[in-house]
Image 1: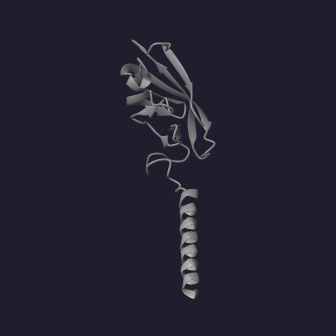
Image 2: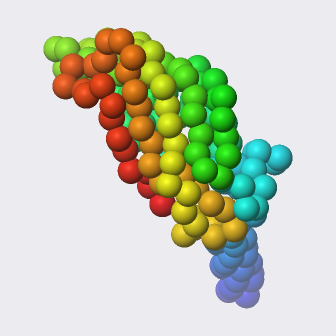
Image 3: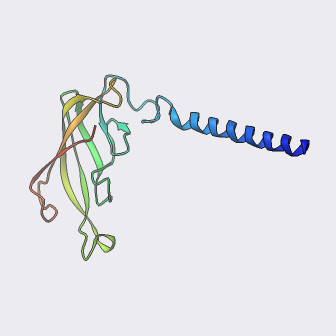
Length: 154
């Protein structure tokens, strides 16, 4: 009986320690968990994606977070300042024909503009862009206007 109690106590203790270690590890992510080291510095204007990562001059940016059916790719930034940012790139949009899972991604050249510098609620040491606009110089996805405006998440 005494051996059984020791074994049970050891198992319970090990389980409690493991639970405590896992809770501590997941409750407090490192300070730079939102961005790779060196990507951003406090006070800098950043673009926040739908996974709450902050970036400066990203090459790609997901617009349709829920289903991934619209993304910006091949972005080339010619301006990045506290007042705003501009880039050219491609908007890849799923035409969802006959339905989204069987649709085709089509590429549309686009000019991207970021504006509306605001304090980021999640990390007040950073300023984030709050608005994104896309301008299609030529063709554009069905149902889109020549200029599309988006409010970015906080």
